[in-house]
Image (spheres, rainbow, N blue to C red):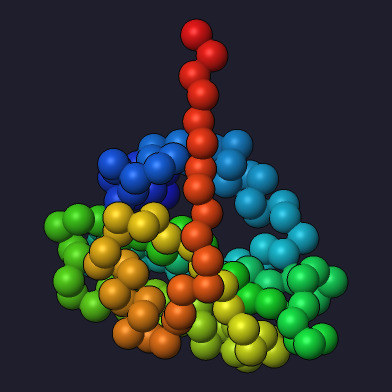
Length: 138
């Protein structure tokens, strides 16, 4: 269900539909993974959203304070606009705050206007842009 949610929620975005079982196993084995930092939203028994929060006390720091990261915030298209994404991000922010993180980073596709508006409404500010390049061999 997690792989299907990821594929449908990120359809049309960079890297869409690329989550595999191997990716999930690798995530669960990362030193910065904590199961308490993983959320799924469910409505009537159906998985409709997800978010992951990560931090590493031995990893990057800002003025000695662990840097938090929110990844893979996703909501199925039919369930968007109901506050699910907002609730997931707020849960992730609270989790990171309780673990001592005072700066949180995330990335979002530039064309994902709705997600960008959500993050800005929650107080996130754009600090830079990444440019991804791809070359197909064959």
